Length: 88
Image (cartoon, rainbow, N blue to C red; front, side, top):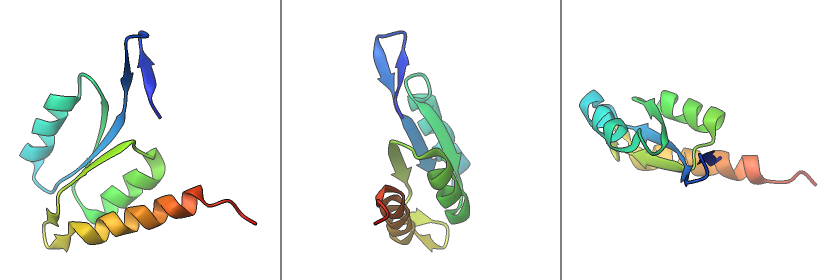
């Protein structure tokens, strides 16, 4: 999912998952000129964006409000494994 930027560099799709808007904005500001960024503020949004966009990189808050970021990470890994499995 990397797009060439005028032949000079590669652009990764980065999913930023954090419930704090200022944190997301800061990361978008830092990464947005070099990479395509996608934001999510909840578990449901994160999993939806992950499945729809297939990002190259995920920056995930491990304390996403009252939710455990590791549980979200495990859901993403399972989703990725299903997507990559080849039917018999």
